Amino acid sequence: MGLREVARERLVAEMVESSVKDLPDNEWTLLVVDETTTKVLSSVCSVSHLVEKRVSLVENIQKKRQPLPNMTVIYFISPTQGSVSRLLADFQAKNPLYKRACVFFSSQLPKQELERIKQSPTLLSRLGALKELNLEFLAIDSRGFTTAGAREETLKDVFGEDANSSGSYEREMDLIVRRLASVFASLKEMPAIRFRMGKPPQEGDPVGASERQLISQRIAVALHAELTDMRQKMAADDSFPNTETCDLVIVDRGMDPVAPFMHEWTYECMCFDLLDDVIENNIFKYTIDTNKGSEEEREVVLGEQDPIWVELRHKHIAEASLLLNDKMNYFKSANKLAKHKANQGNQDDIDTGDLKQMVESLPQYREQLKRLSLHVHIATKLNTLAKQMGLHEIGKLEQDLVYGNATSKEGIKLLGAR
Image (cartoon, rainbow, N blue to C red):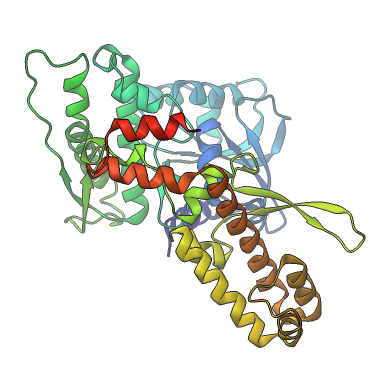
């Protein structure tokens, strides 16, 4: 089971199903989230996943909501002062919004916030559950996740010159640790943590150098403490291992400072690098020619539901193009119409128009051929853009610079020619 599926299963089983199990079969519930948990939820669940479990509506805790005094509500919120304040406001003594509340926090609840909840008799009398779900990472795909979300300030907060005097440095480090801990809580793994030791501070170091050197170490120490505390809290249900079950290696960009300065040539990276004007939130927008001779705009999600995308995404563009050509040859041999077209024109390749006819003539191959046609279109566009932008020459120069086979003179010469 992939990471995204693990997170989805936890949300469904530990949060939603546990909240609705005592409700009548015909009674639905609603889910209230905040800014942080909205991102967590949307990274692993679709609306259909929630509707299947009798969640009729998802609402933002920061917005004004319609009172539903006869309904049970599920709160999935981060344990911040702001979100807890909104929770308490929903259950004011005079006009509580809901009949019953099942509250789940995305990470560990600070003691001061727990005390505030204890001081609300209206909420306590209507509380169906209060639990630290420990699920705050953002799943990118079945194997990848991020702790930062879309925050552009993260690198600046952690690696900036004023990191040693910035409160945002400590907040960001705490966030990273909490969300890493939630990954291991979801996987039910206790890691042996290994990290790259930073150099001792020296006189003359740049401002903020000591903080940057100690990032891996600080995360390792804080994460170990967080996981130890989490294991103690979860000891009763025996859901967290007592011994180390895996390895976690923590490094920073200092291990490989060259990579950010080189173009990536894998299929997925090139898509998001060169096609950023037509890809938004993993949705690729493109146009096709219709039977009527007009153009039609289409959208498709580039994700793990597409087996061709999964197969190609981490391959070098040259390897991906060859693989697409092999798939095309397979369909040529399997499809009589494609054979006829290829023999008629004596061509090695089939264009998009031919693919369209193949799709229409063979329903059993329709979905596969649609996807194949899409990726042929994308790969062709990537190769065309790479040629137009001279990326092959730039890529070769980048490699020569990294390996010491070229100097800045060659770089200036190439840039001056463009």
